[in-house]
Structures are given as C-alpha cells and as structure tokens.
Image 1 (cartoon, rainbow, N blue to C red):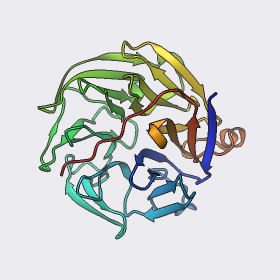
Image 2: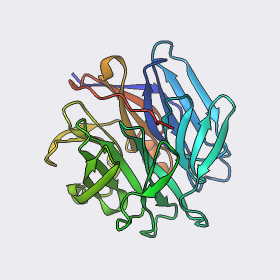
Image 3: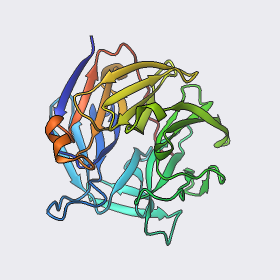
Image 4: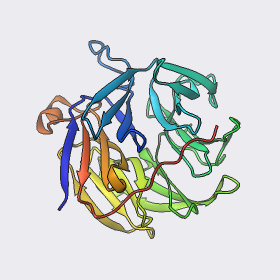
Length: 304
C-alpha cells in the first residue's frame, strides 16, 4: 500500500534536486527560492538535509541559487546556477565558480542537472523570464572542460534529466515544450544523438515537466508540477502509473532510503496563488512515498 509522509514542513520557496546520501542516511536538496521573490521575503538560497535515522534537519545558506547539484567523488558537491558550473563547500558556505558556459547573459542560469555513471555532470540552462528558446544542454567533464551536448537543440527551461540503468538513454524534460525527449547515449564517449519525443503532457495542462529519475526496471519517473502528481512511464513511452499528491507543486524526485525503496519529493510555494496555497496544505514541504514496490538506483558522483 502506498503511503505518503511529510518529513519536514520546511516552507521551501522552490525546493529542487533531492539526492540521497547512503553515507549518512540523509536526503539533501536545494531551496533556491522564487527567482523574483516577494520583497518582504528575504530568505537566502539554501541547501538542506534531513536525516532519516535521527530526524535532524539542517540548513546551509548559500550565496546564490543552486539550480542542481551532485556529490563529488573527492568530497563536496558540483553544482549549476547563476554563475555557471561551480564547486560547493557546505561547511564553509562557499560557491566557487569553475566555468560559466553562458557569460554575459543576465537572464540565463543553469537549472536541472544530473551526474552520469562515468562521472560527468550534465546540466541544462533556462531563461529566468520564461520567454526565449535560448537555453542549451551542457556536459561538464571530470577534467572540468565543458561542451554543448546538442548545438541544435534549444528550449526555454531544462528539466527532467535522467539516465537509464543500461546507460544507453538520456531523458530530458522540455518544460515549456510540454515534452519529455529521449536521446541515444554513448556513455563511453559522453555523446548523445537521435533526440526524439518520448512522452507528451499536452493533455495535462497547466501541469509541467519537472525533475525526474529512473528505477531499476528502466521506468522513467517525473514530477508533474502544477498537476499534483508523480508519473511513471515505461521505456516505450507509455504511462504506467500516476500517484496523486497532497500538494499541487511537486518539483523533483529521487529514490533513497533503505534499498532505495523510498521516493523523496521536493515542492514549492513560489508561483502559487493565495487561493491555491489555501487549498493545498504543506506546499514547500519534503515528502517521502513508501510502498511503491520498486527500487531506484544510487546517484553517481562527479569524477572531478
């Protein structure tokens, strides 16, 4: 039986990129707040951690929005945001820029990203005004060089990046295109090709494609933000399961917990009206979904 648990009513403005850490049995995620916050809300961007074993909640203030992040093999984190790709030092609350792939573009920042099993960090950018198809998908190698992964593919907001268990596919969510695409992936060379439609949400408006993951069976899971659901799609692009949530605005998901059988869900308060906030309690919380009968995969660590 599926059970949905609220772990922490943390009031995230825009919770994102949950990642499970088996080392300390905790879920980490970022709250990068509303890009155009209420002037009375002076909360800084943060990274948060919830310990499943102790119930301890911890927050680190960050100097800028963290669009996405991953753990590094040598310790610390790799991330993407307003200043490009950067290294994150939680204890010292530092963000040190590695390289900015889009310099001189004040309306752009890096958004959704994932590390592949060769230790590369793939991250897509976004137009923070939600207007122009001026964003690209980038790949940061462990030697800290980067490239555009597909020079001909442009979009407004990147989301839903995930890799199948066989390392032959990369999924990508085009948020304002209402489409999940799938690429063929050459994992040894770190190249993608043959982009094609995988799953459309045109019939689920105003829902949008947000953060995603895969399970051990190769099924793709994603958060239907503004639609209040988590969707599971089979490798052929057919809807397999819908999970209704007590919130309207799930943003991203990750498997974790013992044997990776729990699905963690971040959410947001931003972009919701007062009426919507009143109808849907606990917006901006972190949820745990139990009893799904499937398992996820550990997230790889960045090799640089």
